[in-house]
Length: 89
Image 1 (cartoon, rainbow, N blue to C red):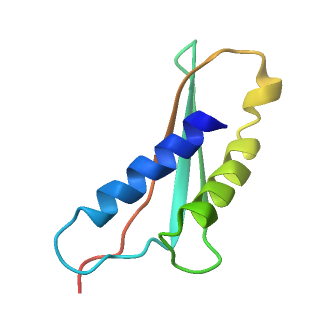
Image 2 (cartoon, rainbow, N blue to C red):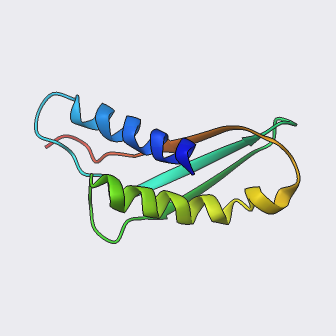
């Protein structure tokens, strides 16, 4: 899904723009907002901490599938990706 890939790319760019050494996320979150205002949030751990866009896209795609967005029947108005970061050292 191109929208999800763009979300991952923007999240990675934001992490890399932070001062100091890059902090690697250990998990990620995918949020889907439907046209009726309902939101579904799926969270999941990464196999290993990573900022590799391919790894994050794959994990985000898996979480997106868990939202059942394709089978729900409602329109999707927003998809978002969050990369929670560990505290700076």
